[in-house]
Length: 357
Image (cartoon, rainbow, N blue to C red):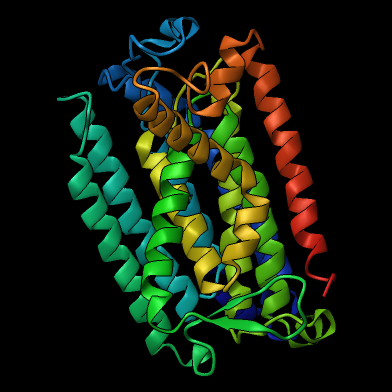
């Protein structure tokens, strides 16, 4: 919006048309919005008693977090919308779709949060899955009807191999469902320590800001022998805005947290991350860069099935994995920072695969 106005006023200045400039300005806008209005939201959540109820079966040291405001995802989503609406190209179909998808994920997460104040379980899992299935079908429909995907609608990138895409054919929709459900729930599970999910999300969103920019640039994509998707470069503006929103939220969510993002944040951001990976055909890259999200989800699955098979024994002291480290005596800030460090390493590895072909 602002970039279009500035471009029309300063017709000889190309700066306002550059994706890199607009991505930077959008991320700064998002960050400043959270810095300025974050405290007001925390106070508002406290005023209406929208606070976290800590489970009795969790780590005992978490009981002191009882009463911490939740649903901080509201300000994350508002900051993403503000930065995107002001600086992204709103005529771009990818941007329009991401705004719609973000709204749908937020509705799901917000509903789950609200229902948790009435019942600890929140939204019935069956209904949550149905909603996620519907979003997956919408993503599938968008890709199949979008002319930018005319020659590779049902394909996904294979790493380390030059110019090779794998055709999933009739398995493509189930694949989308798997990626979406897996990522959304993995991020949701990871959001169990102060600053853990928000810090990791900021890092992984930065990865996709870089990747989508490269994929939308014909020169760069040809040089690196990766798939070129016309107009997808605009998603780098959106991705960097999400990274900035996650980072800004960390200001209030770092240990000891003044506010939790709740499902309004974790489900929304997890859904956004999965959608960007699907639209950019970089689902496998997400598995590498966001590897710790996958490990967190896998640790929970291992714990559940091991418990059933052994009739009561536990593989981990507690799942997801970050709780295992907590009960092993590691402090919460140390676990969080180490998870960030590993995520940075995984993102570097993911970026290196773009050239190793």
